[in-house]
Image (tube, rainbow, N blue to C red; front, top):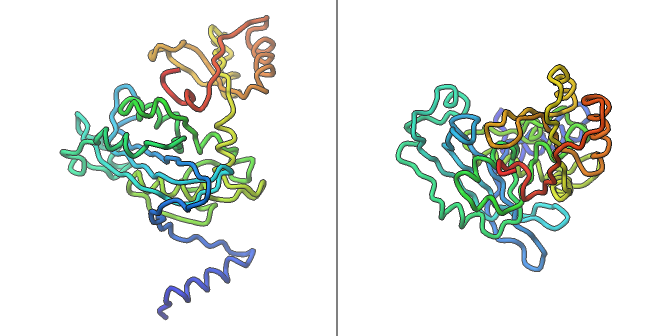
Length: 298
């Protein structure tokens, strides 16, 4: 029998009160609005890119999506100011595997260019840019639009301890389900709308929005440790510890490296001296902040 919207809403509400069921609602993007008057707010940008490949120095952006939102100092999202969605035609045909993954075809991007002035105007006034993989998106964004070099960045995939908050992983669709929604992503901006609701989700372990947890971690300096000239036969130990390999092609050291919070620095240096080098060493250290973290410039 046909059910109208109010009937379906009542059914969903009844199911959600039971411990035997979980209800997922289709994500409907929030409408744009001006920030509420008389309330202190800041501006953030959610950003997602689709590209022809993984190498930020050789592959190209084919789509940029952004959502500009307002939030309070304690990390509560209060509204969406604007959205941005644009295609960019690359210099070569889009690889078939990229089209299969993104559903973006050569015909969709033909003749399109992303206007740098429009991007600059959109991000003006924002105090932070957030992506769900900032280690990927920031490098591409900075290459195309230098305006992203001078702003703080946060990563919703790595700067929230999702497992510690009861989630089995940090995949965006999975987190969105945990927040009570599902979506059928087709455009980069759709993933930005999904990320907005994920960051708006109240973490059950702390009772604060996920955005607040991200902002707290993004504000903390971290230290990058370069384990240069570490023994090759101990590479698996470094990998298990969370170290990543850099091949040196980007001008940075050809070395394993890891980013740790300042409070964990001494413990990590002890690990290197006792488990890897078996002697006292003073590895190369770099202090990172939200203004430099995830950038290819460090």
